[in-house]
Image (cartoon, rainbow, N blue to C red; front, side, top):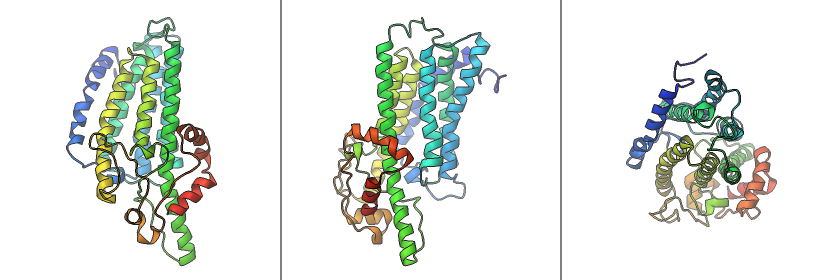
Length: 346
């Protein structure tokens, strides 16, 4: 039974039209290059209409996997397809795994706090997720390859394996660098609670605690978690191959909206922490490379009373290989080494 006739699941005509139009999404993101207004995350603004960060993120991100799963299990029946190729299942599985982490575990379990967001941002991102899921879902569920002997899967086992490896590394890198950002707030929360107990000071909250991350690829890339996600979806596109136009469109659309957001973030960091820090060159706003964090920088982030240490650096997990192995540990319990280092930083 269709939820929305000819759209959920989509008819072939509607799916082809949507895929064509969806290619022009980067034109919409042109506005992001011109203005810094983006009421979400570190650039969120105070408003009575704001949506709680955790709830808003979970709802809008969940729309994608829910839509794709519905199409994936209903459209083949409508088209009389008894069994989809294993390659289709692989791509769908990778997509769902990503969003289990991104839409459920990250906001509802792992993140200690999230800044509120404008309902406009929430609705826009929800629309992005649904549109993207219809594009991908239609391809994987019957409008793309429908058998293992299809030319789009034949002779591509090697490329699919390489793509899957790249996807795994990108996902693990994204998870590691996300957790590095979380540790900033977890350490701030521990510090505040410790001081509240020892000095009878009120806990101020950590929704707006920001610092310059320094570990893993953050040494070189200001938005390392973005970069790793692009690697992840590049690998996913490699699994599908050049003929998988929804995967290509998704990758291009994601970069087109995340790159200007990174540039906005760079300008925010410069305004917040000063121009004396190395955030990258004008040609590469993603580069970071800061090796120390001054007391003034810490004071700007968490208050002058807490800015007592000028430098913080992990010594145990510097390489990307070690980082990706370590991610399995930090998802369940942060190591005492990292906790103690972050506590010392704050």
